[in-house]
Image 1 (tube, rainbow, N blue to C red):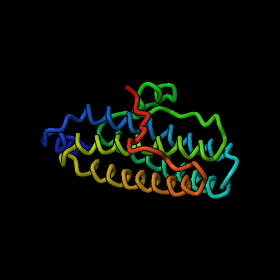
Image 2: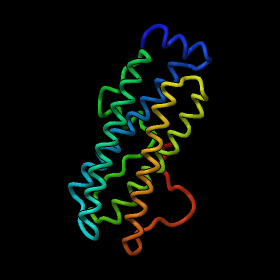
Image 3: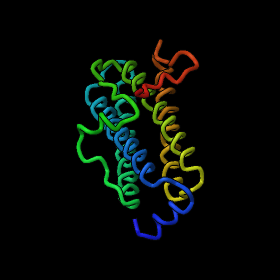
Image 4: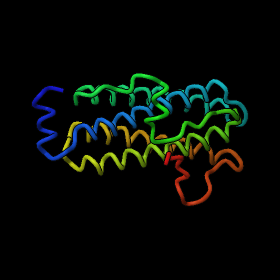
Length: 177
């Protein structure tokens, strides 16, 4: 980031280093989300195979775009994006849910849980920023809107599969402790 840009964010009372850390955690989540969708689309089978693969392929592209936007912002803030896939496990907020069961209903449930976790992560990031970094805030708002759309899309598909709609009121978020 240019000196003035970082100075403006810091002057507003935001811990830039902590922001970079939180953005790197979200960045790691986005790589897992990308791969979970991408590989899920390759192995999916069963009811509604075609529409589910199409949706997962579209979501994979969007998750990769999110990772790109976060990496750019991390660099603008003077940080370095997580450089190693091994480190994604250490840095991520949400669990990577291996699509070991290719059944469409199972894949949808996994991705719904992951989207709910992402929504929670981005809501927390917005609370942390609290209006002190409008550039990052705009990026997070855009990504959050996509994640909410993803959850809606997946829930609609899940409802079309007998027994596939999510149950309960909780988010089922696989947030790491």
